[in-house]
Every structure is written in C-alpha cells, then in structure tokens.
Image (cartoon, rainbow, N blue to C red):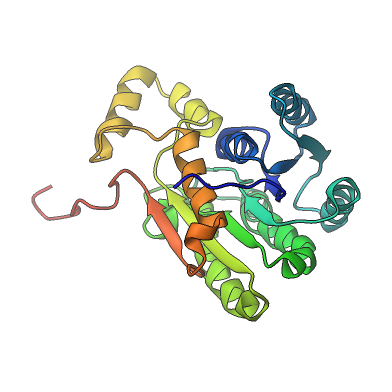
Length: 261
C-alpha cells in the first residue's frame, strides 16, 4: 500500500540527517508538506532545498529540541507557514557509551535531553494541533528499548523510556483520535552508525560483523525505516495505537547467553 499524504503537513524532528532525513524525503515524495526541525542548520537547509528542487514542499526550522522555548518558536513558524500539523515524526537522538561507573552526569543529561526530553517537547508543542486534525505521532525508539548490550546505559535507558512514553500518550490521546506509535530499528546505515564503525581499528570487519548479527544479513537503510513510519502515520494503520513496531532485521530473534557460549 502506497500512502497518499497530499494536503498533509508532517513535522519531522531530527530531520536533517539519518532516519529523519529518510522520513522527510519519503513523506515529501508522497505529497506531504515537510517541516524539518533540527539544530544542524546547514544540513537542514540543504535537505529542504533538495526537496523543493524536486518540486515538493519543505521548510527548515532551526531548533535545539531539548529547549522548550525553541520548540514552541519552531512550531509557531510551522503553523505560520502551513496552518496545520497532521503528522509528527520524532527522530532526534544521540548515542553515548558508558556503564554506571563511567557515565558522567553530564553524559546522562545529554542523552536524556536529546533522546527523551526532545520527544516530550515536540509532542507537547504539536498535540493541540494534532487534536484538531486527528493526526498521528511516530516516535523513533530502538531494539535497545527491548534489550540491551554492554556499555550503553544512558542510551538503552532512554529508549526503554520512550516505549513507556508512547504507550502512556497513546492512551491519553485516543479519545481525541490522535494515534501514537513507535518504531524500534536494529542497525541502520546512518551517520551515527558510520561514525561508531569508523572509530574501530578495523571498520570493514566490524561492518560485516554487524551485518551478520542480523538474521536477514543486512543493515537497514533509512528508507526502510521511513516506509514503516509512513505506514504508521497513514490510513492503513487507522486501528493501531500504542504499539512499537520492531524493525530489526531479526536482530532480537536468536537465543543468546547460554553457558555453551
């Protein structure tokens, strides 16, 4: 099913790169007017230009999403430009490594601000307008909202929290016809993953190892995840709310941790 988003306005946070960029490009290709929110003005402006050069509609609104007044200002700009909000796609996020011993309070706050507070701010600012349009919210979580690996204490905590946030907000907003869902990807070919791999002494080997960790044998592309966002935001998911769809290439399937390993 190919969703038709003509006459719809989609706010895409963290939309300047990675999964957010993929979401912005896909929704624009299906007719949506795209409001890109990100703190990276150079990338955000370039993406908006790419979309408009394709004959589609997009604008960029600079905002540090962890700062409430900045989000309010950005959404005011969106409303001035488009007069409505139908879809909110939350994609902003960062990864930091550390255990409870090595994670500093500054690192903890940085991750929670980027991964959790930014989503709360974006949803809070958009909800009054989504109620009017009976719109949809799609939040980007992670397989690390269901499981974890070593040395990612703050990141996995934030992603677990998002799944609870999605469920709580879905229940609160159901009476207004606003659907709230999430996506939990495995590894995705984004700048975040590329930077992590390039920091390894043997990046090519690590890339192949990551591919092999996924039973489907591949690392997802941003467009793969964007397709799921489009489904959850569209009419085909009209009866879906409070769910987080796992799109991990089978990463969570194998049994691990047996004594034989």
